[in-house]
Length: 246
Image (cartoon, rainbow, N blue to C red; front, top):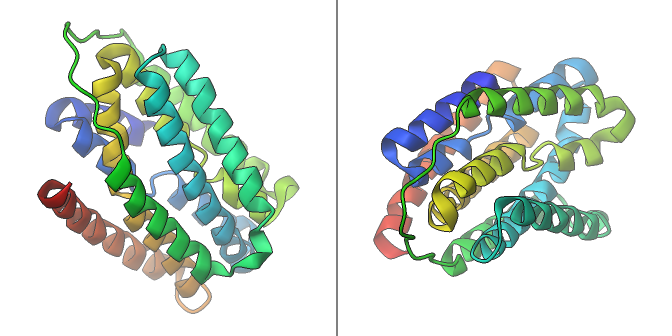
């Protein structure tokens, strides 16, 4: 995880925030946590957690919208607080509707909302002024993300599959990228990285959906490999779609 967040940061600086956000949307956190769920709690636990993770994906959409609308008016810490409140609020509401839809329904809903979110995501105008650069920011990102992954994995038995699933996509990598980008580049740079992440959410949801279908019947390695390949293909297709039509 430290390597991932460091790599995403470097990619954002080299190829732009949109590409960095798209790379960040890959299952860098959810994948390893699901792997640990499978190895430690069993396949049934991991599969049961997928529906919760889908709810968490929808919660991240709420996080992204709350952050960017706040970022256009407020500092990073205000935006981050409001975004986390949005994530928590959305996931609590969705938890009450957990039994009204099966996995297929949550997958379709996550895809529809992700695509709709891309269409209506606000376009922020570039700001004047030079970008800031923080010392040791990559190392800070590495520490934060490592602590989070370890904590969620440790709490899995206590939380149960649904809440463990909801917290698996908890916007820690999204928050790190958004807050650091907001502080150093302003709302415009933040909008690019969040929009890049939204572009990859359909592929991310597909990865999760495939794990629920493949893990009971195939090896962990094969299930994850197929899911990751499909995720990458969908990300590339979505990026081409966004560049052409949005």
